[in-house]
Length: 80
Image 1 (tube, rainbow, N blue to C red):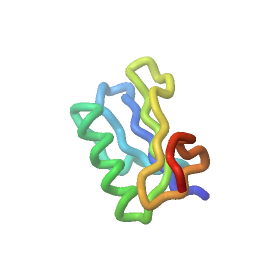
Image 2: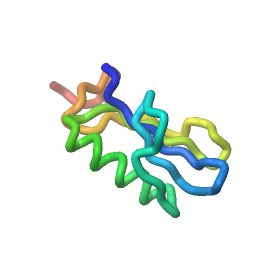
Image 3: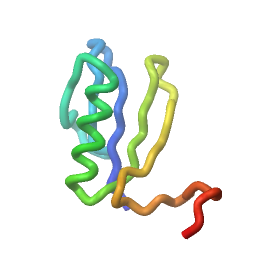
Image 4: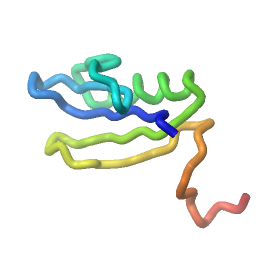
């Protein structure tokens, strides 16, 4: 797979949007919402993938598949 991005707060207080496995951030932002929006846009342009969002405490807050990615655990209430 390998297509994924992560949003987290760095030690400088910036919110970072980074490709999983990359050494450098793809972008830095003042707010988590801005970083999340940038990550979603980058994933959509790259053909989809997994987006992991970490909270201020560094713990994973949410994981989502950005279309047109392949969700490994789709909601069970939707019929295919």
